[in-house]
Length: 314
Ligand code: GLU
Image 1 (cartoon, rainbow, N blue to C red):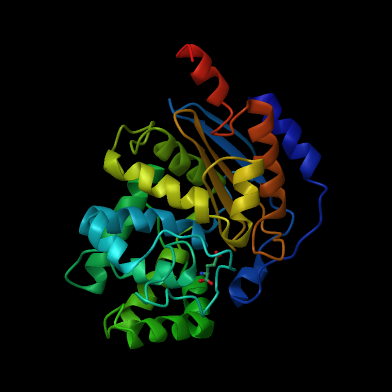
Image 2: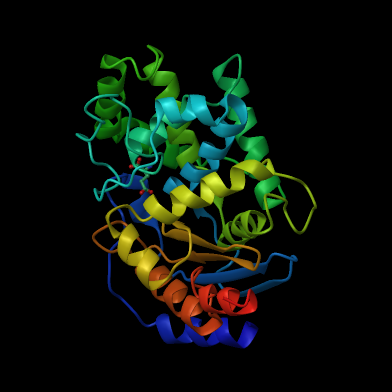
């Protein structure tokens, strides 16, 4: 495993395609050469290469994990009433797509759905809700996580599109009148600082049924693990989700900070950091690494179909 990720690191390090995100001005300060690959098995063995300790903001990779908190705090039916689970085939920040009849956002991975989901974290005050969020992320990664204040403020002062999305949802009564509080929480969750190693531990926790395999701490009730993985599988890569499912076959999530995680259920978690992004806002090197790990390790979730049928004798 270690040899394999070192081979991939050296193969993809020279790639210079893609560009840094700059619509959140602070993100344009990242080092384009940074590149880290981390793997953590569902048993807690860890393999790493490159800049695995380099911190970056989690951005949209926070979305499925906050969806998990919403499920835990409000239950499946109430969350489904507020946010759907249908892929849109649209970009992450698409503004126009609320379901015509229900006015629900289509899924919790596009920004509209993610903002509506941030509104479903239980707590008596904004500080309570932020503390709840940070405690859950700490359980996934195995140590404390904190927001990057500069990135938070940068997005908060320039996130007009997200503000417009939130106000549109307020217009349809899909979120409450405390729009600024909801957006602050969304911007805070996006600005949490993580490493590729942290992402691999988060993915390994999902691969291990919701329990962090290093600490033994449960981060998510078991019954919601499949909900998270399902929306990551169908919607995690936005308008690239179908091709990703076809080629790589792993639930995954990307973020404009340059991170990506992928989950091979029951087997392992992958975390990659490289901030050069393609036109869809996904890390170019991370896509290549995940594609190759999936094919070299036979991780596609449907690769097993044949052996299961032959084992059952049909
Ligand atoms: N905070 C970013 C936004 O809302 C997240 C986008 C992403 O990582 O895809 O625009």
